[in-house]
Image (cartoon, rainbow, N blue to C red; front, side, top):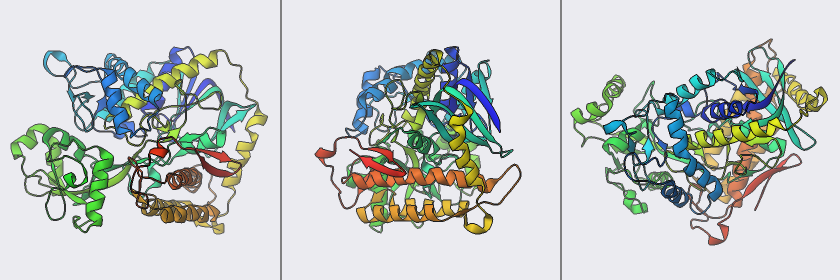
Length: 552
């Protein structure tokens, strides 16, 4: 068994985790920055393509209060206004700080940072590096900055299975080195959960493979509560057909931003206006509304051959396409796609989670010493997130969590002892002791769960479907997962540990969705198609003994 200690432990090393580590180190805290893959190479930030929303006013006059108004409107009356204000008010500072650290924001005349207008925003306020590489640009900037911080120790390939709480306070964590198979214990005066969202629990998703909802499961088991877990955002125009190899399925967003693009049903008719949207190639409809419209067209038998709708750029001249996206057009050609001749098929996919860990404005949970950052945090975006707010959230909440945790650690004695982590270590050893003939491979059970969540807890839900999903989750949980013995690297065990987190998080989503008997934002109940004014309030999820329970 290996033991490491630091003032602050950051679990997850995407954009939020790296920013948190930097901010904590600036408070003279020693920091352990962990990731279950490679530090700075996993998570959602590095996969993001397009924009970062912040009211810096370089493209046109803007103010953070206007950004806040747009964010609250998109959230359908459910945003935590304090968190939303924190996001919008501090976004510009993070953009300029990233600029000083070498982020190559696209520039226009006079060296001003270029900004575009995304759906739901009243101004051109979304910054970008380029139209396909903003996320990698942001992640690369943060990796370089982390490497300059002597107080940050980076630890890759460690999956955390439990946050250790002693005398009501988070004092460290227990996990496994996925390469050696060794148990690793961590003593820390503050723990930050920055392990991202949950979209891997759905069959169709746009996330990296390490977004299995671990942050939520860790928080629940530690005694924190979650908020708004019923609100999963489905990205409306993920690529569906023809076959696309080596390119991101949500790559069409920047094409629509820059060039426009007509969404057409299977009869080649525009349809967004039927559902309250205004599209006509201008791309002004927000994501929950667009996903709803697409799925309703498919349900009505007006979908494209593969079950989506068409995204059509045939009205855009070839020279214009090449001028905007040059090399990308060639890569599309290698996939047999000529946008001047053929529309592509697109459909919604699980993309982001508005819900998450409930925190205060210091990003601290109800468990003292336990913080959260980035997509792991719930509440700021309410029932629907605006395009461009996700990376802003990672940067702002990461900085806030790191600063608060670093300050708190300075006045806190270590609460760790070998005895306090023993229960978590025993649980981990027990998972490794499962025999191969005892059950079903964990990766097969993961696929069952993904199918179940897609079919019964997807874009459209009913009470019957949600109850069936909860029964299915219980059946999967009661099915023994086979783990083959291995010295060192053991993918079976990794899948088993991830499955445990996925099941806990999936149950939290299904229970919250069942509890909200209305349709609002990204949560659409076919048996309750209207919004209910009495439900303009947030729903929480917590552990009651070994049970996941939702409460108002």
